[in-house]
Length: 446
Image (tube, rainbow, N blue to C red; front, side, top):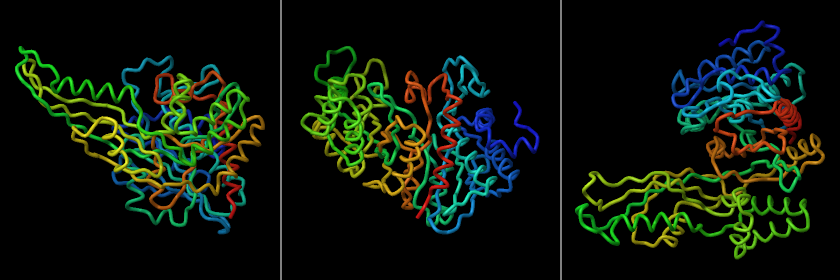
């Protein structure tokens, strides 16, 4: 594995973001354990080659974060570019091409992190270096934060910075991070969802009690039966419908751009009495919309029983709960009890709060950049059903936009390729995104 090149090649690497991405992929930053230090040091040296000094801020030297700043004219608030270099595991996955070599095949860069999110970091760093090299006129400062530990808890990354070094982000109003800006095809038309909000994590624990006994004796209606009933309800039924402002805007924009047959059907999803009916009619396509219209809770772990000949009298079920903007743990508890009944024990085990509404002040600028890059595409706001480091920066009043633009072919499924075997990104998508992020830097106006 080599990360060396001549000084002149390094200083112009911003002109070759694909090559920069290849270099980043070659650092194995699988989290856990992360080991992001070598990758972060490489980026620090790269910035130094073009005259940009950076600061390392770390809770643990093996899990550092890099902060760098380009000075602007002070006429606009600083703009934050934030991205992480840790990646998820490749264990037990079968890859066509090695996941940590960053090789190019069939017009794609292959490797773990090409989509999530070393591809985005390469775009950001390349745009940042270009702004320095070309002495771009910046209305406000541009702050670059390359982070560790997003794929776990953020305890060494964004969460640590926000809780211990908030002064680094003073006066920042908007940030660019993951996920959004990539091509989404619906009925053959191109859309570019820009993430403006994300759902909130709300971990749940359900405890079910009932009669246990000897494994040799029949047990009807016992704890196992109650567990089965609970699982069946969670599999077959949804929590109540909620129409948030972002989802209303998103579906409205889709409906107005699509055909007279599809558009009105999508609009019916905004009628709570019709939402689930339309989702059923959409079939597999409903997965795009379903989590944007409901709080959700999925069973992820079940524990119970200690011995083969003893029927357990208790089961503990862990659920991954996700809340829509504007809703809190008390809403999740109320909705769960309404769904499954109150004869269970239910507690919240974790919760990350977030803003109830999006600050849309930078949205039109970002949408305009994509509209110019692809006049046949339609930008639209979207809610992410998962979470990113944006939830931590929101505690400082910073609005993160998921804006890592990627021009993707129609047969490429972004969501099924992230975290999966054969993660890859089109070469052209990296160049497309780098140009778009550079435009965002220079268009950050008061």
